[in-house]
Image 1 (cartoon, rainbow, N blue to C red):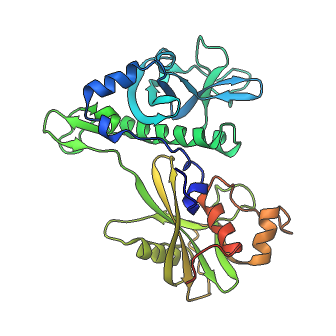
Image 2 (cartoon, rainbow, N blue to C red):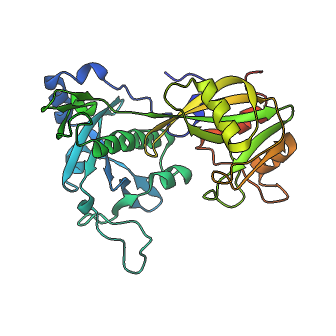
Image 3 (cartoon, one colour):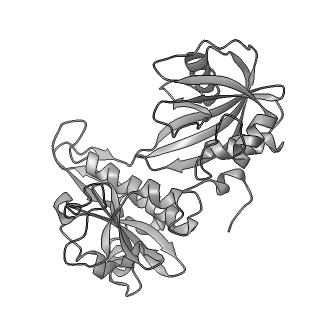
Length: 324
């Protein structure tokens, strides 16, 4: 069931799979899901989603039996079930994809023996809306979970090899008995506001002219509110008081949870951290509106709709955030 909270409007958040948590410890149930003729899979290789490109259409979901034949399988995980049947994630060894064409070394690597199949950048699939929103969420879940398995082959306690279990939702170390569970890294992303102005910054890696909300990883021992205050102060020199949660977003690069907040600024002067930001400034509502419309006189722009920063900025502009 869909609910109208702001988080549901962010990219990678509209999957709605029944995650079948009760089936993860039931080996017979897991086998029946794998053997279900309706079982399908999303396939990852080299951090890319394997897709089939046809005229005007991109396919990322394949019958499980077909997906398992795409190359050497590293991991297979249960993502859940939707109205079409069980859904799995499958990761392939890096050599399962070929090299980009010689005449286009920046192109997508092909899947040998499968015409029209290639590895596709997940961010590109989302930004260009090449897949339905629901499928983008499924691809994001597969990327996050399979990526975690790829980075946790060894036990962090004793260093021995670990084995995938519970349908992909745990790894076990036979040497010391430790259990390891998939991790999501919390990141605070926040819009500091002061009257009719909001604080935005840009990093050198951003597209030309794009400004966004400030963000940073939540550190051990911090509350969300204190992380918001610390990050804004460190990056901009601006102090904030009250902080209100607004929305969250799963972000599979590689596996984060973006925690979107609105923060009330209690100072105005900017002392920018030049190691983090290329620019940081206050924007009025009229400027922000022009950025969304693509009409800013200096060519400034807002983040794409898949990003929670877009939602934070738009909802503040339209008055749909909590009062501070």
